[in-house]
Length: 234
Ligand code: C5P
Image 1 (cartoon, protein in one colour):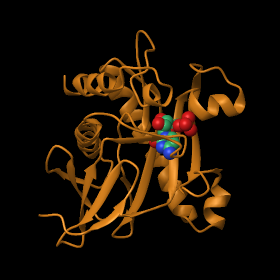
Image 2: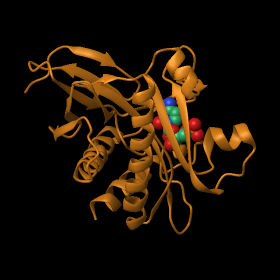
Image 3: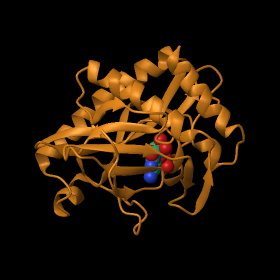
Image 4: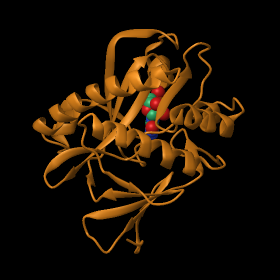
């Protein structure tokens, strides 16, 4: 199946149509942005790492019964996926305080929560992805109550599966961001799962091995992405 015209270009990926209207090809780029596009750069071979890592995790989740858009890995940077209609809500699950939540609520980074904390953001570049709640999602008609309930239960299950998997790789899943879409009337997991969209700390040293190395200019950005992939493949 070959790429036809580009449908959409995001900050980290391009999406192409194919001859089969039920399938898209996603191309992962090396471009990196942070703080809603204010900070821009490139992380060498990030597209390759994120494509491979997302492939590994989407296949794992399928084995565990979590439906997602992944069909096949086509090349270094390309993935064949189901042509889902993305629900414009970013779903965040947090196991440990970090990032915007730590800042907003004055919680110390690294504090582990007794239970996962779920947050929703409205996917809108103009508005800077503002935090919203379930009532906002319904009021703006981004998703129905039934869809929100499914998204919440899938997110908890996915967080549980990935936390356990990463733990076996000596990685602590601090938080992650998921996106869901509709395919044949069903809500399924879409987008990517990578060091761009998860916070991953070394389980022994708490060393950050994710996009915070780029966001906070911590150095060894490329090396950290490669290290995560290396551990996942072990
Ligand atoms: O910045 P914040 O603490 O809200 O991020 C929570 C999680 O969501 C992090 O894992 C981050 O990488 C991810 N995220 C994302 N895309 C965004 C915002 C956050 O993948 N636009």
